[in-house]
Length: 81
Image (cartoon, rainbow, N blue to C red; front, top):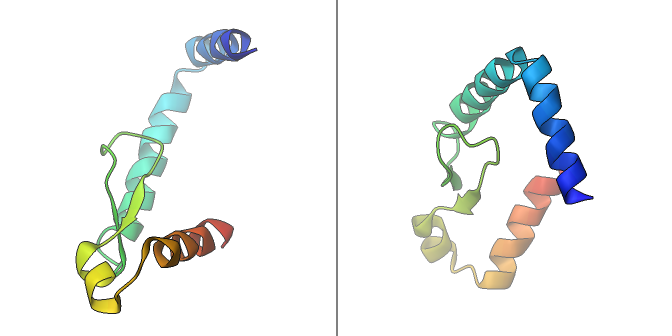
């Protein structure tokens, strides 16, 4: 099933290369909204990675004395929203 999905994805991208251009623009837009505005999180993934790995800033974890469970709950709330 994964091989079929990967194969179909490659076919779609070959037939519609503009998808990649639009994806890169979407990534830039989201990062521009998140990175400078967030007091709590930072994106730790590569600039061109469409999967944004968000982590709580170490200074927030320390100042709020958040344990791992607290951190997971905050990040889950972000996902849910």
